[in-house]
Length: 231
Image (cartoon, rainbow, N blue to C red; front, side):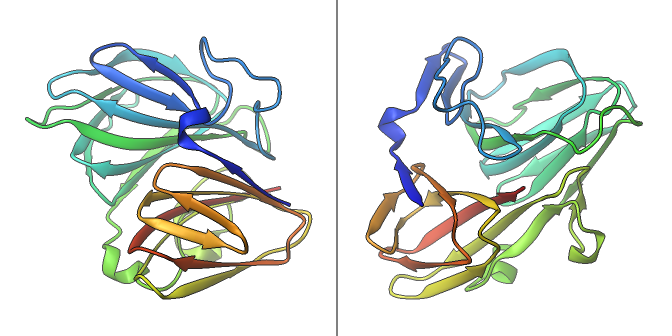
C-alpha cells in the first residue's frame, strides 16, 4: 500500500511566530484516520520566526527527533544540555521518565524543521539528548540512518524499534530501500519532486507505505528525503 497525503490536506495552525502543519493528529487538529503510522506518532512541519521559539515545557515517554531543514534551532533542557542544530543536521531527545526543555530560533532568519515523535518500546528510563552533523554529501544517492534503535547503524540512539533516515538524489536518479512487508514507512521529501511507482509526491507531501518489501524512489527533480521506518 502506498498512500499519498498531500501537503494541502495536512492539519495546520498559524500562531504568527509558528506556522505548523501536522501529518498526524496533534493539538487542535484531530483526524481519527491520521493518529499514527506504526509507532510514528507525530510528524510536524514547522516554520519558526527569527527570535522566537518554544518556551520551556515538559515531555515524557517519547522519542523526539528534530530534522532542521533551514536555519538552526537551539535546545536547552533540565539535564543541563544546550546545543545548536543547523540545517541538514539532527537532534534526538529521549524524554524517558520526564524532562523539561525549550527550542528557540536564535537566528536572524526563519527556521524550518521536521519534528518527529516515535513511541518508545518501553516506558520510563533516564532522559537523554544528543545532536549530530550529517553532511548531505554522505547521503548522496543512498539512505543513511540519522537516528535508530539499532546500535549497529551508527546513528543517534532512540529507544524504539525504528529508524529515521535521510537521502539526497539527483533528478533522473533512483534509490531503493529494502524493508519487510510488516514494517511501516513514512516518507516526506524536504525538497524536490519524486515518484514511487505511480505515486508522485512534491516537497512536504507525506507518503505512507506498508506491505512492501522494497520501494524505489525516483527523483523527478533534485530531492532531499526523510524516511521513517517503524514496527
